[in-house]
Image 1 (tube, rainbow, N blue to C red):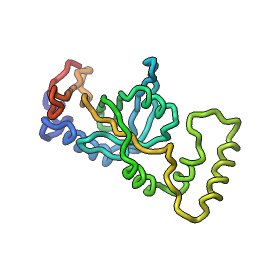
Image 2 (spheres, helix red, strand yellow):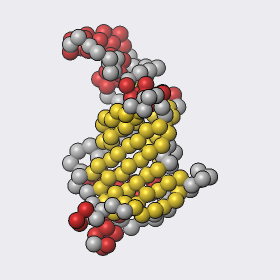
Image 3 (spheres, rainbow, N blue to C red):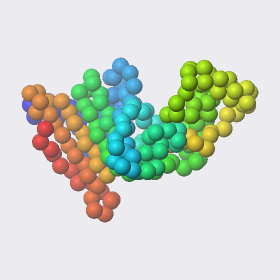
Length: 206
């Protein structure tokens, strides 16, 4: 049993959760059938009512985990009211999960601009056309707005809308979970220390 868990965790330095995440994420990209970058994003509004949805991880480093969205969407509005959020990755073939919690902040305008320009033109137009999370009478409403903005920008550069950009979740808690026989799973928790400069590492009961 212990041998299986050790194999699943991987032979990496355990004092830095970003090193371990990098190893697991690269393995997921090699082995999972689709969307290894898909993660559940959980947010809550000012009253504490939670909401969850799937978004895609676009970047990560020791500063945090980055995703992009419409700032006026439901998740964007909730993060404006309550900056704390949680992420959860589930990699079925690897039998692993990673849970991440912490406050969020908007990435810089320059960082959002750079990523926006890397997107397909259709996705750029879509960011302008969709008033995300708001009701529409029918699909034609969206198609009409897509046509309007396609005509507006013609063949020129599509600028990033002010209402669209990135968030970075700055983790203060990261848990790595590996499947175990008889549900005796392996759980390793990293928590920011009091100074915010290092990590406390604990094993948790499954």
